[in-house]
Picture 1 (tube, helix red, strand yellow):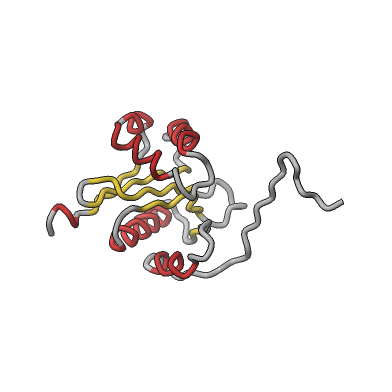
Picture 2: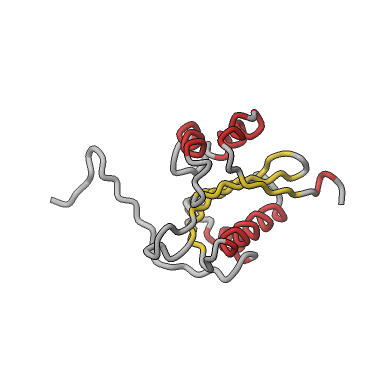
Length: 158
């Protein structure tokens, strides 16, 4: 298979890696849309927690360029029943998305866990989201995610 089809995955556990221009710029791009935190705040958080073994940051190259990134938190207590995918970003092909999902499964299983939780924060795209994760395992909808804004005019019922 040629260079254009090569997929390589990396775990980023050294804070110095984020100083590399290619990594730095890709992280900013990966958190520029649909993220729960802004790009610069995300970058600073990843740098600060780079050596935290429970926070797994993985990046993938496709065709020699960074095209995928995921942030996973491994359970730190029995009160957390599953690993959680906090962020999943790809600019790549379906093959890359599958490789990313399967790599996440490998990391979670090797850490001794057998469940992954994730959320789709993009309304109206649940079918595609589920299809992507089916390459990794059985996908089930469990509950509903609610966001409660507790800042400023909080909209509390009187």
